[in-house]
Image: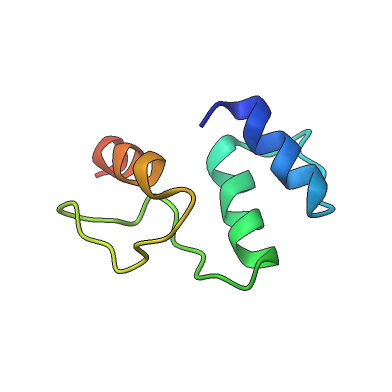
Length: 66
């Protein structure tokens, strides 16, 4: 998902996106929704959050981070 889309979602949750990275924004959104704050923590392509909006981006980010 593009950064502008993430920022729009963040704003809808009352999160001010100006100084946060994309990953920080997504984690803030996850927290505000009451979901596990786990973005970019998927290892070996495994994650039990199958209906997560961020799933595809999470796997891509996790590969870069690890």
